[in-house]
Amino acid sequence: MTLAPLILWFRRDLRLDDLPMLTAALATGRPLIPVFVLDPETEALGAAPKWRLGLGLEVFAKRLEAMGARLVLRRGAALEVLRALVAETGAAGVYWSRLYDPAARARDGAVKAGLREAGLIAESHAGHLIHEPWTVETGTGGFYRVYTPYWKAVRGRAVAGAVAAPARLPVPEVWPAGERLEDWRLGAAMNRGAAVVGRYVQVGAAAALARLQRFLDGPVGEYREARDFPAVDACSGLSENLAYGEIGPRRIWHAGWAAMERGAAGAEHFLKELVWREFSYHLMFHTPQITSRNWKPEWDAFPWQGDSQAAEWWRRGMTGEPFVDAAMREMYVTGRMHNRGRMIVASYLTKHLMTDWRIGQKWFEECLVDWDPAANAMGWQWAAGSGPDAAPYFRIFNPATQVEKFDGDAVYRKRFIAELSRQAGPEALAFFDAVPRSWNLTPSQRYPMPLVDLSEGRERALAAYANRGLQAVEGKETRFSGL
Image (cartoon, rainbow, N blue to C red; front, side, top):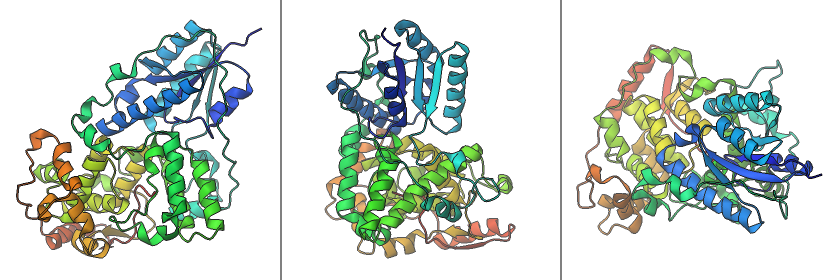
């Protein structure tokens, strides 16, 4: 007798290797029906991540087709769509990989309850993280609030090996109908920016593995020091692929650990940054308010400014602070931003411009192809001072001193700011092709004067912090994307 099929509900796990959901499903011997649902939670993605998701789905669908399978696309509320697919296919149930942001947890909980109520199999599996958030506990049984103890707790933990992709998938005799990816127009909000950013993305599982290998073959050795210099190609770039599950974190962990054992000087620091991602999810799971409210409640009374013309100039990369503007323009041209740049632009917005961190968080969500709900929230709150930080002071990054320290030869600034070069390069000019026409920005315009005097901005931030009895210092560490 032929077993009833299982529906594999793919989301941010667009790969076939090292995927516990798939391993468990294959063990059942049932035919498998891969499905992606464009539900309201996914529709709510910002322009860049939604566009990049569409690219990932296209590559993943082709990978499945090469194995004689297919990716069934459906649009609608997840529970309704999955119920309909079960009815059409006679499926025994649904497997999926867990997600941990508040919206996903609410959706997935409703799906699990609804399917089980109907007598169907409904299983969620690991795969997005190395360690499930509830499995890492302090000595007293609580969750970790500070990164370094968390790192020490997981550094020596056993991590299951990465499982290779299967050679084939058991498929149903009849496939359910699906929608066309191009009809979803996932890249519509990118407008003309898609053509610019598209030159830089590296899409799919094969590209992710190649990216990892390139990093381990070279940059990992100097990673700890070189990763702070935005003009140096020292980072892995894997945050883009991790965001869509095109590579599993366990595979990266084992590859990084092997590099460390071979003597690669920067490998352990790279592993620490991978665990920083884990820590951000650990906190988001245990304190979900980190995505929308001040992690430290005492900051609720802090006099943040709302959106303003100054914040708009920040968005446009026209603050008059070259490090800030170069980083913002890098984001519009490449879809990503160097980790040091993320800290500089976040510190500048929240401290020199005294603007609510949620304004910056939302803008990154709109513009980054490697947008990640946990890392983005954690990074912005860490930069603003309202989030987790073991230090008893608040870091205020001075863009002027930072740019001299980390871009002393101005290579990064000139790479992305046309107005600073007599002969602007292609990436500096591409900025004007990527941004909205309504901004009316042209390469011939004069570079703006600074929005605020950096000393005055710092003193204003210090005055606002003073009533909390805390000390502000020049920022040194970088904690944002981390890869």
